[in-house]
Every structure is written in structure tokens, then in C-alpha cells.
Image (cartoon, rainbow, N blue to C red; front, top):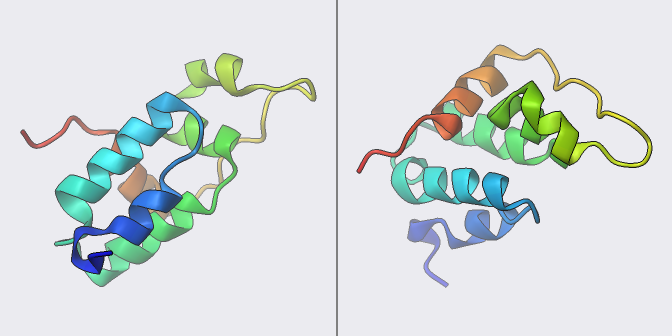
Length: 96
């Protein structure tokens, strides 16, 4: 496996929700490799969030309907400047 292409991190981007998978994988392919270390760490922290919080952070509150399970709506994502910054980059349109 070629680590320079982000393959190990790509595996962590597979969340089971197509919208999240597409956003996260696009970020890794287009920006992760050349990102500063602090941004990489923030992205890896972002990946540690539970899917409902990640969906709300990347897709907005409208995603809660799809992400809410039988136990009700998920908790709001944590308020964190670095996570908010990397989430905005992940959710931004691609570079193409």
C-alpha cells in the first residue's frame, strides 16, 4: 500500500453513509497529502467523531433526519475551532 497517497486514511473515511464517504474521500485525495501537519491532525480528529455528529458538521442540521436513529437525534458536534476549520474544507466543493 502506498502511504503517500493516503490509502490508510482513505480506509478510515468509509463511514457507511455515501454522502460522508464522498466528502471525506475527496478531501483525502485532493488536499490531505499536501496539508500542514496541524490540518492532518484535525482531520484525523474529525474522523474520530461518531457518524451523526460528523454528518451534522459536514452536511448541516438537515442531515439529522437521515442520521437520527431509533434513539432520537444525535448530539450536536463539539464546538472546536480546528474541527470547524477542517470540516469547512471537507465540505467545500472540490478543486477540479
